[in-house]
Length: 194
Ligand SMILES: Nc1nc2c(ncn2[C@@H]2O[C@H](COP(=O)(O)OP(=O)(O)O)[C@@H](O)[C@H]2O)c(=O)[nH]1
Ligand SMILES: Nc1ncnc2c1ncn2[C@@H]1O[C@H](COP(=O)(O)OP(=O)(O)O)[C@@H](O)[C@H]1O
Image (cartoon, rainbow, N blue to C red; front, side, top):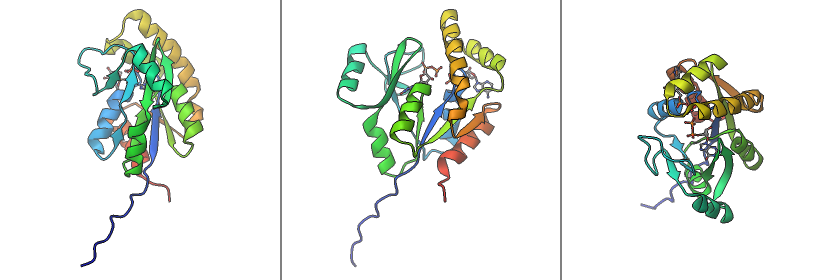
C-alpha cells in the first residue's frame, strides 16, 4: 500500500466580532462555542486586572505594562489598542497557526483593533454585535455589576463611538436573544463563500 501525504488543510476563515461594552459579546461567544465547538477563539492579552472568576490564560493573558510593551516591541501582536484606560492585544502566532490548520477563528475585539485587522487581513469577515437599544445596553452594563459607576460611564461614552461605526462592518447582528444571535454568528463563521 502506498502512503499518501495528508492533504494540506484549506486555510480557514477569520471572523472579527466587535460591539460596545455590555452588548453581550462574551455571552454570545460562549454560546457560539457551545453550538460550534470547532471554532477557535483567540485569547487576548490585557493590562487590566482580572475580574472575580477570571483566570490567567482562560479569559485573557493578564500582563503588566512592561510585558505588554515587550510583545509590541517584538511584533508578537496582530493588533492592539487602548480601551477604557487599559491595553488589549491579539497574540499573532496562535491566530496564524489555527487558520493555517483549517480552524475557523474568532477574535472578540474592540473597534480600533478591528480596523487594524481590516488593514492587514481584508479577507476576514467583520461582524458587529448591536444592542436592541441604547437603553438596553446601559441596563446590561449596569446589571452585570463588574465595574464602578465611573467606569460604566466611560464605557457608555465609548459605546456611542462604537455604535456610530457599525456600518464599517460586513454584517450587523442584533443581540436581542442570546441563542438567536449566537446561531446567526455561527452561520457567518462556519459557512464558506462559494
Ligand atoms: N483591540 C482589542 N480589543 C480587545 C481585545 N480583547 C478584548 N478586547 C476588547 O476590549 C474591550 C474591553 O474588554 P473587557 O475589559 O474584557 O470588557 P467587556 O468586553 O466589557 O467584558 C471589549 O470591547 C473587548 O472586545 C484585543 O485583543 N484587542
Ligand atoms: N441577549 C441578551 N439579553 C439580555 N441580557 C444579556 C443578553 N446578552 C448578554 N446579556 C447580559 O448583559 C451583560 C453584559 O454581557 P457581556 O457578555 O458581559 O457583554 P460584553 O462582553 O459585550 O461586554 C451580562 O450581564 C449578560 O448576562
